[in-house]
Image (tube, rainbow, N blue to C red):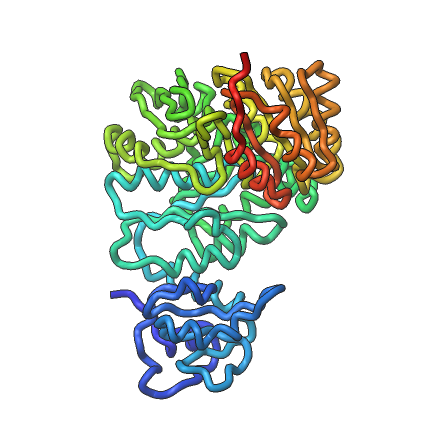
Length: 459
């Protein structure tokens, strides 16, 4: 049994154990930062946040069964043992790296400007047909979420799929030091965090920091549809995937079954088989050959890959399809950049019925922001979107690009309140409505209003 104790935690982090002798060697399993998520035996990590200080919730964590706390200041009259360290964030990273080293199982790391959560879920679904898999919950992919995920490993797990997200140089290296992936997938080099990373070459440099922390026998699985990734040499075995037949694994003959599912053929050399993905969005098919490649590497049969992918489900507000009884809503409000918005528009354009796009600002695009927003508007018009509702300062440029490309029925609003108030007059019975913007725009409020909208059938 692999487990930690307060004393081991103190030794690994260089911290000081505070507590009774009887608690020094109790078993600690798993780690959380939210006292409401504590399970018996957990390590509660006290994080100082902008609105709350985790140290203030240590007693509550112990009442819920925490075995130990990790703290960076003394906790008075606490009900259990804790380890005092200089920085809880740095210490949980050290602890996560140590704990990951206790497990000799295949670990797949995943990053990319677009599609990393989708690919993580699809790879984990495929592997789930044969293995017990640990995967990153939702999108806990940063320097706190990754070690907390690693701390969830236990002896039942036979593989791990870890999502790794960054916004600046150096972060991927720090994540990879913890994860030490055996296989590393990069889904795309796009315009996410371009303000911090400068340009696409900068994004490539930041994402590929991980390879310096992999063993020589490690494997890079790269989206070959991306020209930068196609030409990149990771100095280790490289497998490419995507839609283009030039890739080692490719997806073709993609067919959507409305908003319920899509099918595609997976091709690798002479091998061909058909998979069904039980979700909406043509872009999802690009993750399927990545899952097939990982399946092959870990010894799954084609049938096992197909069976596993049937359990795939989107996470959160990512291409979430809601049928209200009046309209169909594609809620895709988690995040937005030019690549993901174009993919969503392309998928929406294939639906039967009138297609409406409700689009908002794409953030952190740096100096090319204006041009990229205009291009999204033009792309929406070319894709056959039949009405555009935009909201946000940057989204005014989406509106402008749509109008310049002769898009139909364009409407721009200064606020979400104004847009929501106008919905009864702009949405028709049977419409397909895509809602997409950067997460901080809170377009989930618009999606919620659409779900409540009652639309009469017009004569």
